View 1 (cartoon, each protein chain N blue to C red):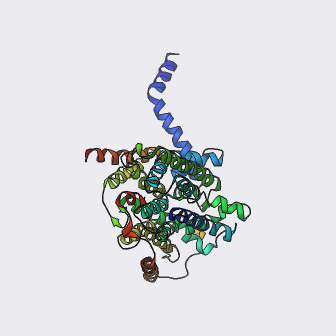
View 2: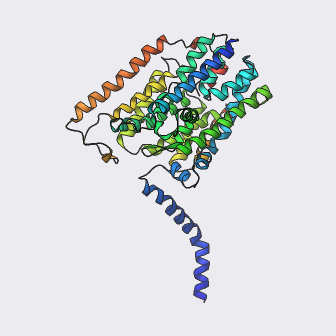
View 3: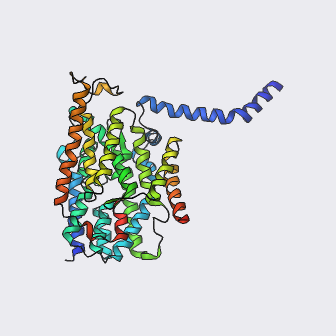
Length: 324
Length: 102
């Protein structure tokens, strides 16, 4: 009896934290095994039974920042003289922060509609490859697919990515929450005006790079993914000072071409996905890879110089937001 | 019609078209296996580019400001396997505190 009490007491005092962590570890290990390491974020989201709600839960940590930037868009749009209706209609139809800030800053600095449109379309062009990659996730007829695809933004795209595809319900759940937060924030900003705090004061602009880092980190499991990420970041950094905003990120998508030709020797966990390469030596594969990656930025640079983006016409206050 | 409305309507229509083009035209077909590797690597390439531009780009120039410190702190939180909310809050709080100090 005494032994039992001592045992129970010791397990309560000492073992509880351990057993708790062991239990948590067990819970976290299971989904990881099932899906060959889909990343801890995805695993945590996957535990919720309802897909749409999983998306909502996954995006919750971000909603305050997104709503705050929606508010600041509303405030800046009012300050630039866009008008309340146009500002809110823009958040409802365009639903893409960086492009909307670009339009406000170009118009606010006295730029033409054409310049504003050019800058915004460049910034949103990245959604074409992103939506194409996720296209098999959408369901139904053309109109429904068109509407569902509107909920695709950087955050919902990244959160819904799964091993070998995209989770439609997570994309829609997360996208819908972001849509409400962004549009609602815009309406609040339009009404409340300048009386609200600048999101930058709260450091919210630093939340987004950290978010994307948290989303990319679990993907860097093999050499290809690491190479694509480093190359993508490198392309974006190199092009930022010499091309209009928007081009660096689009050009960085060329980094995914490292997956087309690669040395047969490199170990990759998802090897069964593609047949073994016939006989490219390391050297030739690397040559084609670097050739492919060198080519794209050059194309982007050329088209970038023709683009009607009015880089010089933007006001410094609004443009500080534009690239985020 | 004011320039603002022209910009709002054209950008809105263009964005709807950009987002819908792939899903509407490609339908539910899976992308061909040959492209699957490249599509798989689109996410790391694009997300890394977003990290780079959102942390270090202001318009068309590279800057090193409080966002970089926030990113560093967020990266440390990621290495410690912190949940997403903690990562985001750590990054924002770091940048905010540095701005208060500065």
